[in-house]
Length: 190
Image (cartoon, helix red, strand yellow):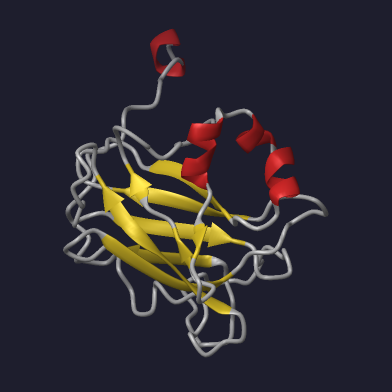
């Protein structure tokens, strides 16, 4: 090997979508649990651009612990048998940028930790996917002690906390740019 071949660097990702109609969506991808499952909730919201316009051709993935804080080690995240919780889902937004997952409130993975759902956004114009978190709004003490949230100014922190609706569901809107832009995270190697 020459020195030139040992110093290769990663190339930028390819522009994302709108190519989701083939192979990426799958039956019940939005349904981490059946709506009749005890404790099921609807996680929903709208994906918008910097002008507040809906982005109709984006796709979202979520990863989360179950209601007891257990991270699934179940093989086959595509399993959708109405009783196996695998902690992973994927959904394409509709033509007005709206998305819906049927899932459960994640429990804390450690005592005192703030429970959250990991969210990945794929959309037109993005060279790479975006990562963020969706925190549950109830445990103010855990939220105040969360290292990520406490590193952010108050107005930015709010973009990561979902709104609890009267029926128990969660609303989490995703703004890709501009005022109230959702805080996005970077992970080494991603």
